[in-house]
Picture (cartoon, one colour):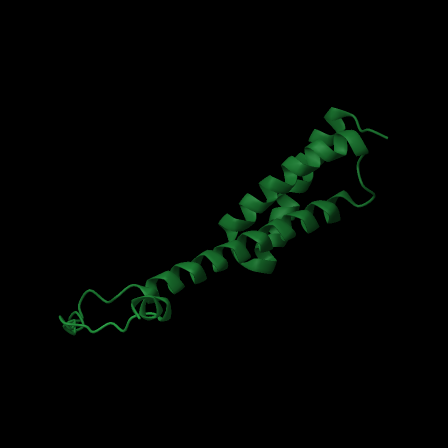
Length: 120
């Protein structure tokens, strides 16, 4: 049940602004919404040509774009969290370096069991 290329293109041109508007109203992030709709349009263009147009194409496009947007937001949050963790591990360049404790120069070592057994 494949769809005609011209039909799919016309449908995507009509539905793209509607999906973008729905995402911007829901998430208030135009740039991320625009990227998510573009990715959903690419997915729809390839899938709808082979599998046919779904029963509710606007709902399909909005759902896929919304999921892509949520994935982008979660990915960005995870990246920031990782960067904050790494920044917390790095020493503060404005604080003085910790004082080094001198190593003892004459350390005494006790012989191991096998060594003391062979000397007897």
